[in-house]
Length: 349
Ligand code: 2P0
Image (cartoon, rainbow, N blue to C red; front, side, top):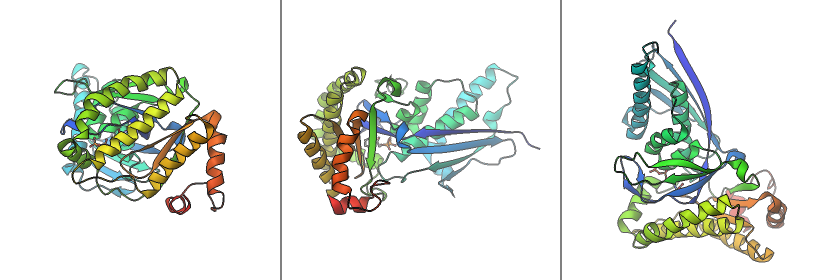
């Protein structure tokens, strides 16, 4: 029987509170600004990936949500990620002759998301993070998460942040080879365990404009974008890290909402414009501001990625305040307590 190795891993979704939008190098996925995210460990949105390598396999294969991806060899990002991981294994094997040369074997990968794929819920982030962490485990690499984040980044920029739990920064770096463009932990989840997230799925369909093409349209056509990357984000990056370290929810929440709005403003300022938020999203924005006005302080923040779905951040101590408000609005809808469906949300607000 042929020799086999297996590994399995789960990676959670991360939702940026300071958005990555724009690349200065499209093949290495080097961003035009640093970003910050919170990894949604508690929200149960995750990718589970298993991998196997065997001397008897004849090609690399990948199954996504039960279906084989037959274009695997044509995916530059996937092949780049796999070859970078194999290179690291090869280096290890060259230093230790007792190691089996599994860097020369093919790999089979099975990956499953428990949430809508490509609907602006950071599916590629969790997907590539899980793939990198899983194959690194399979190949028994010794690299730490920051080192692996440089490989995950090449699969999908935001994936580099999903290798860590809690509060994570992706430092854009300066070097042309990307060796300093990496994810680092700002604080583990235990630092601020009161932080909670709630996802309002306004629409689970695939997005019209992929992030990859949308962000380059913004880079090439938006006038607002220059101000965002040179002035707005660098200042917010430092302030947001401080707000996390000081557990200053109001500052964190205000920066989060402003940055979501700034990101969507540059989308709208792209030419032709990109619309990720829809009428339901805008109603959620108004609802959140109404809730904060009602309580006289910022107790909840919204943020929207490249899609219409809202992620709300709040502290556990305010869950009743927030949910009672939401309950008052949703109580007539059947099954609201299990999940807010997009249609219900759209109908109701
Ligand atoms: C983010 N997004 O920071 C931002 C906010 C969407 C809006 O990262 O081309 O899928 O694979 O590097 O990582 C989505 O972009 O793009 C994204 P690629 P990615 O989370």
